[in-house]
Image 1 (cartoon, rainbow, N blue to C red):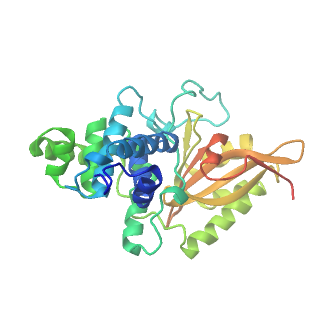
Image 2: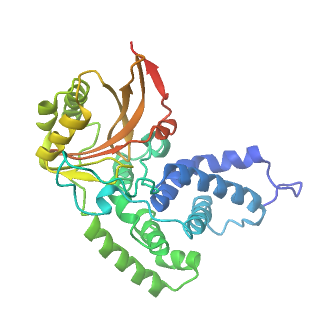
Length: 332
């Protein structure tokens, strides 16, 4: 679409038109790719392509739909030669013994990443029910399960069940029939149900009872109180720590691992509460001999009425940049 002078809108003008959709585009690309870094790259690619072709945009669909079309195609191209991003629990069964040798094969896999709520949260004034629904579509278990779907099937499910596109719209985007879209959707839903049962029981991070539990968890972790931390876990809790390819299932094994290999002295860690994937989360800093706490991990927690049911500790200091957190800070 040209302006009165017949020229394309400038980059500043286009940026202003596209800015309201940036967060949901990032959320969409993250659901497709399972990586906040890759999602950021594809959002930039989407906006660049959209700006270059804005003169051909005839308004037959909304700006929002048009941008999501471009973003979906960008993500499908990006996925052509990439491996899926798993969590350790997606590679095999839990480790049986926290005292025995632990596997390291696969440590260099492209792992799933968490996404900061601050980058994808709905804008102020949004309907509270819509906010809760949007957060549910970013939960870690769902994103992990999506990685097992073939890319086009993944796109169909996200476009239909998250963005509420009509089957005909999805068929037009993918260059296929509505029958093929409906068939792909049915297969995707079936696979997703098997890998990621409904997580309706996960509590909202802002819930007061949840906040009280998180305060106790942080205190126990910082003071190396393994017994106190274990008391907050459900009996069948799980813990995984990418890029470590192993994981543990059950309160007792998790407590034994933490006591013997992680929480060996009080004051070794500092916890800062953050939000990730619509769930309760912590940025974890680990102290060094020089008196500085350095970025160590982003922990994302599943919390239900039974307590903490899963801890995913992403032991990757580079993730702190996405959360706008410093890499280190001195002891206060």
